[in-house]
Each structure stands twice: as structure tokens, then as C-alpha cells.
Image (cartoon, rainbow, N blue to C red; front, side, top):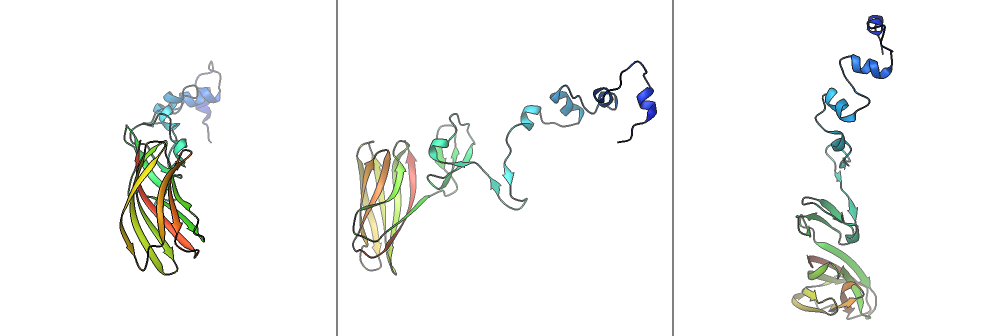
Length: 208
């Protein structure tokens, strides 16, 4: 930086310091006051606004990096408009001022597989926050597929469900049930054979 001698000596009674120099030359900064510095520098944001977290992006034509975490990690005092990715329900969700809800076609998707005829939990939901579930379940074994739709609700202790709309390429590959285990609302599958069976469950959830 080049400093003119005339600037330094224009007032011999003023002690030269970095602060004095910055304040004297076009008033570009006020080191002692962050808000004043922003005004002096022509910035419209306040100091508190500049200190707020910002959403990062991978590139101008890439992706936005938004907060991600399980249901318990939600903000304790959310404000309408908050947006996050729920790693527990594997879906995007937003807060509307009253409750959190899935957005943008955010169906919860869970997968499981078995190689036995033992009843197995293939999907699980937090029963303390999820009151009802509408699920589409696909079972696949080899080239055969079986798809069904299940409506589920519970009272915190007992889960009930109705199944409808079953379609199979050959025979139904599994029988389904629901229960409450601990704090989890679960969908249970019992495969009809010990052949490897893969399950995909896509659900719309309704919160308590």
C-alpha cells in the first residue's frame, strides 16, 4: 500500500495509527464498530446478518448442501420455512409453522432382504412422532414380484393395518403384519419360501 507523505503530516498533532489512518482516509472503516464498518464500506447487511450460517453450494450449477440428521435432531424451536433432509425417514422435510412434513415427493423408502421363512421387520417408523403410514411394499424373489399396499395406524401400544390392491406375477411372495416394538412402528414380512427375497417399502407418513 502507498501512503502519501502529505496525508501523514497534514495534522502534526494527531498520532498516526492504523485506526486513525483508516478513519481519516475516506472513512472506509471503523475498526472499533462492526456495524459502522459495514455502513462505511457500503454494505447493506448488518453484522448479525453476516454472521448467520449460509447454505453452501457445490457449484453455481451444482447442488445446495442443506442440513441433514435424524428426527430427534430437528430444531427444538423451528420457524416456518425451515428445510432439512431427514436421514431417518430418508426424505426431505419442511416446517410450516405448526409441524414438520415431507416435501417434494419425499416418500420414505426402506429396504430389507431375507433368506428364510422367519418373520422379519422390513420397515420401521418412530411411533412417538408417526401416527399413521400408507405403504407400498414390493417383494422380489428371482424374477418374480409381488406388490401390495398397506394402511397402518396405532394407539402407541397396538398397531393395526389393512392390506389391499395385491398384484403378483405368480404367487404372493410374503405375508405381512404390523406391530409396536419399543418406540418403533414396524412392518413385518414372512416370506413363503427360503429363497432370497428383497423388499422395498415406500411410504407416506402422517405425524402425531
